[in-house]
Amino acid sequence: MKIALLGYGKMGQVIERIALERGHEIVLKKDEFNTFDGLSTADVAIDFSVPMAAVENISACFNNNVPVVSGTTGWLDRYDEMIALCKEKNGGFISSSNFSLGVNLFFGLNEYLAKMMANIEGYKVTMEEIHHIHKLDAPSGTAISLAQGVIENSDYSKWTLEEAKDNEIHIEAVRTGEVPGTHTVTYDSGIDSIEIKHTAHNREGFALGAVIAAEWLAGKQGIYSMRDVLNIQ
Image (cartoon, rainbow, N blue to C red; front, side, top):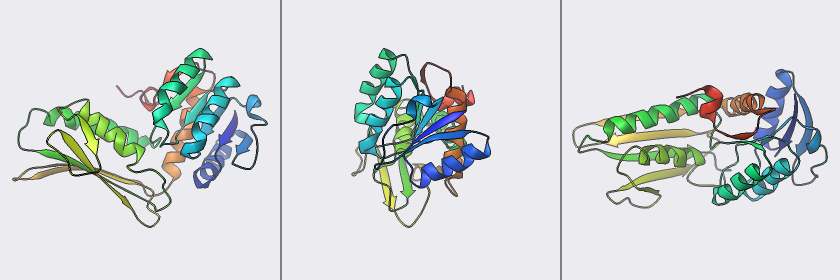
């Protein structure tokens, strides 16, 4: 399979190594210093760039009839615009805040726990996410996805980085060292606490999941998620 890498930072380089190990070919390594030359020859593209480049990268894929897997966060204010373009161009698209297989299982666990806790009184949910100092957006896209998972299965209405009101979920965003990513969801009461946590040890899991998603998406049209890739109900 021929892969275009859109974004060639630390994540892009790990994705490249894993893709090559799995027998794929890299036909484009796009960064801020080169063009999209070679994109049209790709079977699929993987976008791990920066928020200000994501929309241009994803648009270029749709305009070149190349399915795209995007793990870039911080650009979702234009998500609906990209979905409309995907449909217009009959493109293939997977966008996820986190491609780690473990994190996507964690998403499902989070939603299941939220359903269980929805009718139990006395518990307040909070979240914490810890990432390396180079991460540009806060809270993380993964934390936002976790918050949305709770909101869709409870009476909570929004998340906030500030002090939370009764119907809000407080997210604590911490930036320190070179932490790949740690996410914790806590239900706390005066009696006890219930906590679920995912800790990434390195970038390998994110990269492997992105390559697996690209393998699954190649040759397809439509808008999908990691639930489709992993067949999570």
